[in-house]
Image (tube, rainbow, N blue to C red; front, top):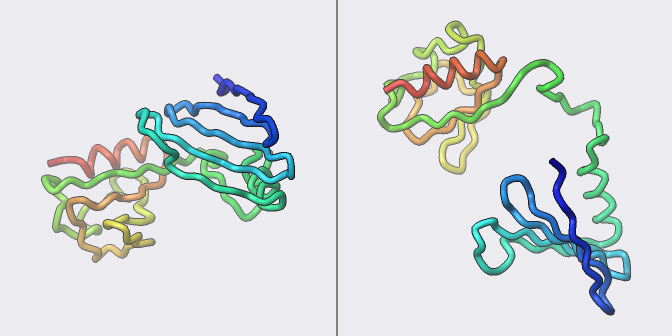
Length: 160
């Protein structure tokens, strides 16, 4: 289902376009008469005030619009869905049997066909972790593979 857009005329300013995302977030774009745009995002929880607010020049708005277009295709981007792959984030709990053990001991790729391509530890991303990397509760593992492989990896990694 596509989002429903509401348009409101703002005298002396321009037009405001409002819509809500499937996740319940609310976005407003004000198209100013001078061609600039204001983009505001609001949380779906009803909290007051914008979660973010951006003012874009005409050129900045054009670049953003181009990047957001569904047809925007950059040959440098590899789309996993075209290859039948998915990427999943899997949280490792402190109670996990893998907490404190090395990545290699999971034998994840051999068992599931999926690969851990990065680990998020707090605000620190760790790309391409080696087999000797020691896992810790609270880590988020970025796993890439087939749907079946990532589901099996999630089952394996969340074992207590």
